[in-house]
Length: 275
Image (cartoon, rainbow, N blue to C red; front, side, top):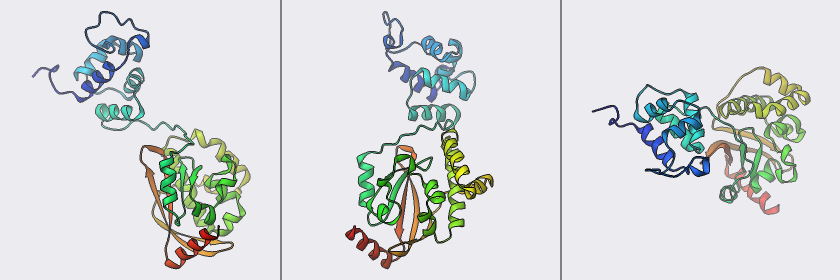
């Protein structure tokens, strides 16, 4: 079997994607084309690589491409994030480096999921730990995020700068260190280090405790655990703390606090009814 005839999943996919593009919309003359879409030389031109190299890539010749070349081709073919990831998996057997793209809005579907989780407090946070959605139980038991400006709806700000939240923690030092280590890991995983630079600087200025813990450079993986809080009105609660990825939104995490006892559940139900 010739090299041209060998199955080449990456080449097949690239050829299909270039066939979907409109040459005229990208500034190329569209007359006298035997097949739809861009020609190989036009993709190569847009990607700033040689036509010969791109041709070899589609034909499965010339060895594995570099990540830089795949990035250029993904841009040239105007691939979506999931298409870009697919090309990297085909070409290199691994996903591309993460590109952090902040999005504050969530869909009504996600909000309905949170609302159905009552009486368990639940919220959705970004990779930079800004809270962008929550349910009624979270408002009553944790923080009334709806009363705050968006820039103040950050988990770390409340842990380190909100005296009420700090006082409600059963073991604040342990909780704070876990939060900082988990935050650090999330930020790096999401490629959001530059996006949190101002937040980190602010917290270092305003909280010596945060500065001390941040300099420790420790990291923690997200894990299921029991969280204890002491509500100023309702008293102590125990919650099973679980984190879940949001399908289709790698920048978001859903956090659910499930009451550990029937007594805790009954207190929350009564508090929600009163609220």
